[in-house]
Length: 101
Image (cartoon, rainbow, N blue to C red):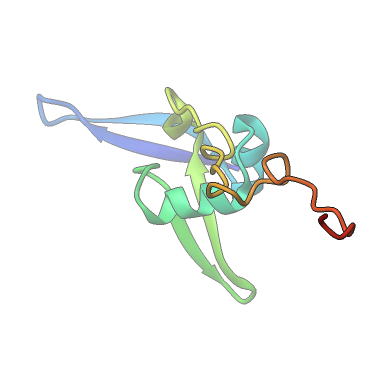
């Protein structure tokens, strides 16, 4: 899908730049990020020229290809949480059913 950007230069003249609009799915495939992450980033304004278009099936986001320049998605997953002390499978001692003498 093609579209035209209109940029206003410092001299006040407009300049048209042709570009490609990508869907959430296309951006996710190109960046390796999840579609839900890309959708969230659109709502947060990370892609400044992204456009939400209302359709009968809901909102469809179109992200200009130029907005992906310099975009690096965060790596998936966060820091691993440590189990509380004494709750680890490895830290437990095996209890015997034998009666103590």
